[in-house]
Image 1 (tube, rainbow, N blue to C red):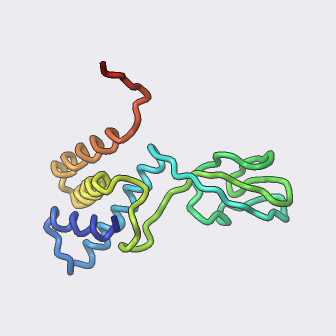
Image 2: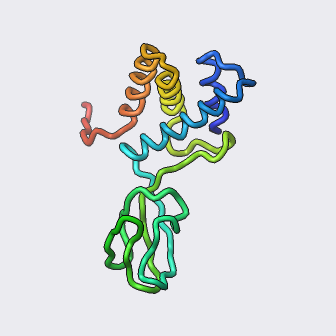
Image 3: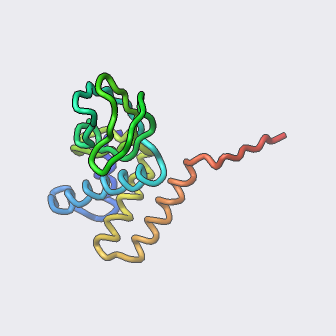
Length: 158
C-alpha cells in the first residue's frame, strides 16, 4: 500500500480537505514521526552496506540510510561520536536504520498500514491540541502495534 492512500484515509477521518496543503504536509511529517518512533523503539529495520575504507574510519554520514545502531561489522571496530574506526580495506557493516518517507508515493513496507494510520491520527491530534482525540487514537495505535509484536510465549491448544 502506498503512503498517499493512508494519508487520504487520515484526511477523511480528520475532516481535512485534500486541497489543504499545509495540513497535508503536517500529515506527511506525522507519518515520518510515527515510523521513526516505531523503528527507534520497537522494530529494527536492518540493512547491510559495504565500504572501501582508506582512512581507517567510516563517517556516519557515509551510510546510505539514516544510521541508528551497529548490528555487526566484518572486522574489529571502535565507535566514536561521528564515525566508526575500522581497518583499511573492504568492510561490511550491518546496521539498524530509521526509514523515511521521501514522498507520498512511497510504499509502506515497515509496518502494518492500519497501525501507521492510527499513529498518524494520534500524532496529528497531539500536534493540534486535540487531547481527548489524541488519547483515543494513541490507544488504538498502541493496541495494533503491540498486538503485532511476538510475546515470546506460545501455547498449543488441544
